Image (cartoon, rainbow, N blue to C red; front, side, top):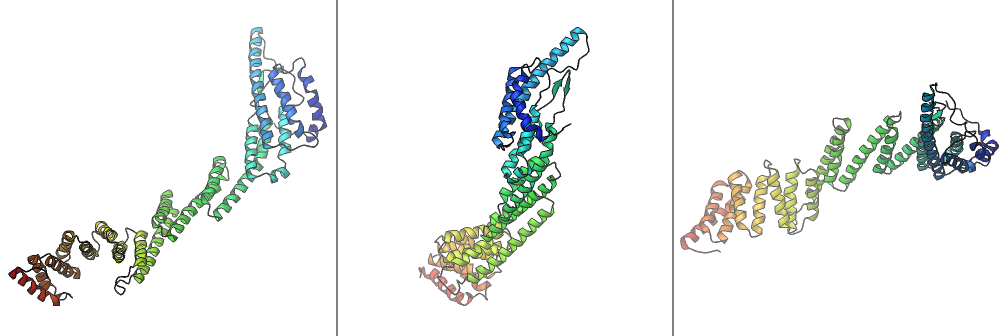
Amino acid sequence: MYIRVAKVLFSVTLMLFIVAAQVLCSARRAIADTPIHNSYLQILQSAQPFLSPVKTQPSIAQLQSLLDAAEKYFSAKRQHEQILFSQLQERQFNNGRFFSQEAPYPPQKITVHDVLIQVFDNAITPQNIKAVSLAGLILLRDLLRQLKTLDQGHLSGAVWLYDSPLPGFSTQHLISIDDLIIKRSLADAVGLRKKHQYAAAQKIYKSLLKDYAETENGRQIKVLLTAAIVEDYNYRAKIAFAKHDYKKGRTALQHLAALFPNSEISTKALADLKKMVSRAVVVNKKAGDSHYKAKTQYGVPQKEAAVYYQRTYEADPEGPQAPYALYWWSRALVTEGKYKMAIEKLQLLLRQFPLCDMRAQATYSLGFDYMINKDYPKAKVLFQKVVENYGDTDRASEALWQMAIQDAIRNNFPEALKSMQMLHDRYPKSPRWPHSAKWVKVFKEKIRTGGTWP
């Protein structure tokens, strides 16, 4: 049982004992092993400045050095006592006597335990602890943990005793130091979270959990760690959506939902994702429509509209407004002369959305863009698809008109006549219809006379 040594013992009295240590240790049954004796004296001399009436406060490095010396001392002492114990057993067995309780050597007037306790007691007074940084507290805690394990039993006569005062002393002080470490760490983490430095806050919580997960504080720390993780991903999503980095924003919330499956956190993350995406689509689509003025500003690049339609698509690339965004994004790109990019957007639309109601428009526009880029063979294939697959739309009559004119320009009047005749017969409500009869007559005449365009 740990009995605290009165501090008065370690003032003048302890100094006298230190001076007398060599005399005591050279007695008839003193510690026989010279390294143990030297180690003992080294510990006493190292501790002297911190046990004097002035009581100089040791640094962390000095405490560590003292503990390292004590660890060597206890290790050497135990090895020596194990040898004595074996010899004692052998001697008593040979003599046929019971084990005696005779000590292997007289007890020390000043034990290493006493020295260590007094030095640490002086180092970790309440006043001293208040001035120690969090990093310093953690180092002190680790030193106390080391102190707690130093003496792993000693020989008393023929019996091993495990009555070291070090565990009790260390445990007593660890309680208050652990509380301070947790309190200060949690306060630091709160400050970091307020600054949106969530990774640093999580690092603190995880570090605390390594040491205190199984304590009564463990549950609270785990809750705070979870909260910091949730705040982290929500903040990432918020910033990403504000910067129109929709892929990054979606990824953040989707990852958060995956981290906590089948939980309220997951449900809320997915709901927030849907809400953010929906708002981004609505806002950017509306802005794109308001900026797209190609019909009234012929020849004017619609750059701003292109930006907003791009954002609309990227906010929800698989959503119901994605085909609309892709289509008008491509039309805005055309006004900038970016036909290659416009074609890519229309191809993506047709590939990604096989059932959308904008396929007729997209197929016709893709053909038109190829035609403008002088790739009429590809354009004609697409125009024919519009006529065959979307014959009940106004794009079909436009496709027939473009094929008729383009074939005529290439002096392919039989094909031109075929397309124009179909337009005239099937689409009387088409804006092109009033002109179709005249062109049918022209094409027939060209075929009859073998004429050329124009």
